[in-house]
Image 1 (cartoon, helix red, strand yellow):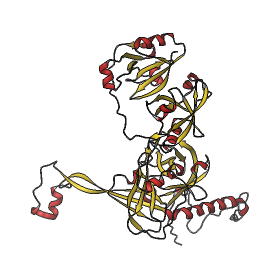
Image 2 (tube, one colour; image 1 turned 180 degrees about the vertical axis):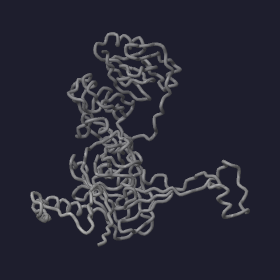
Image 3 (cartoon, helix red, strand yellow; image 1 turned 180 degrees about the horizontal axis):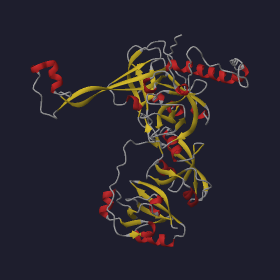
Image 4 (cartoon, rainbow, N blue to C red; image 1 turned 90 degrees about the vertical axis):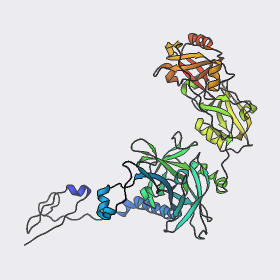
Amino acid sequence: MKLSCKIRATGAAAGLALFVALGSFPTLAAAGSSSAQAVPPGPIPESVIAPAVQLGKAFAAVAAHVKPAVVSVYSEKMVNVQSQDFPFGDDFLRRFFGDQLPQPKQRGEQKEHKVPQQGMGSGMILDKQGHILTNYHVVSDVDEIKVQLADKRSFPAEIVGTDPKTDVAIIKIKGPVPDNLPTVQLGDSDAMQDGNLVMAVGAPFGLTQTVTIGIISAKGRSDVGIADYEDFLQTDAPINPGNSGGPLVNMHGEVIGMNSAIATGGGGLGGEGQSAGVGFAIPTNMIKAMLPTLIKGKPITRGMLGVVIQDVTQDLAQQFHLADATGALISQVNKGSPADKAGLKAGDVIVRFDGTEVQDNRQLRNLVAATAPGVKARVGVVRNGKEETFIVTIGKMPTEAVAAAKQPAPTTDQFAKFGLSVQALTPDLAKQLGLEGERGALVSDVDEGGPASLAGLQSGDLITEANHQPIADVAELRRVLDTAKDSVLLLVKRRGQSLFVVLRVN
């Protein structure tokens, strides 16, 4: 008897041993018996698997509801590249052209060519007019855009409106728009809670119409470093390059976020690498407020208080006699600004904005930015341990950026106990740093790891107050520091803005 067999093993099956005896096979016996034929187990009772089956049906229903309105966004840009005329060498080309080979240019001489650079992301159809929501970074600085629907139909598209500060863009199908476009429904992102089930849809690594599931891991993530205004939903639903611009949906099939970035296995953020279970989505409530303006192709106008704010640390909470480390501390009020006209002052801690309790700097910044200029807002602050309310007419956010000042040269005036060097603010330094008319002690050097460094002081900072006392020069700062016991509250001006720092004495 001749026996032949082909074996293909993958995963765990590759570790199994296969015993083959010519003309015979081993007999598998049931436990406790050496001769009984093994009986395959029966199906798992329906009552046991019913919850899992029902959850699977729910996921399938959500996917079927959302996927038709999710598109793949293809972009192309022509870029210049340089290469040598004959990259494979003369010998290679002479095999095909013989002695008719053109005279080559000198070795190392480069020739410029235009080649297409292609990108891919995701998007979601908002309305029957063909408006599509996606990320700004998916369509910025490109020459051509094409969208492919779930049913494989492709259309050219054009940019209608963008907001780089939040990484949001609206594109639209060019030319005739089909009358049977499916659309997404935007839900309430504020209603989501940590642990809620969510589904991400998009084209990771070019694999269109991919569905992944997970939960909301956290809300209100900021300082991610992707956009100027951040209030991300964090999710562990696998998101990878190509998912950007696609929807994050709840179990009702409503879009509650737009997938935008990932934390990769290497610790970086952005579109490179692969998912490490930490993804970020822009909440829809932030997007919905901008949609009417972006669809009209107009720029987003943001509100402004005219203050410099910072988070309240435990040290600052003690200095300002606060119950806890929440709110946004005003370190500077710009002259003539809405806050100045309303009576707000440096040292006030904003704890409430138009009925919303303020937890930190990031939240207040987003609340003010989302308020239309001209609106009168009620701002609750803690001043000298008591809460007061001010009515502020919100201003318009300017677009010009503040230029960074050059740092002065360090001097030998050492405050060795604090790892700090300070010097007088001369007229020349004041002009160089944009500090004309200011008074104080200028930080010229900070020892790494010293008390001043741990407090956050930097070279170029101008110390203008110490323990609520104005500082006119180095001598006044020295007197305050010499008499301090545990810590000193400093007000410093840095690159045109003020902030409070707590310098530990011991």
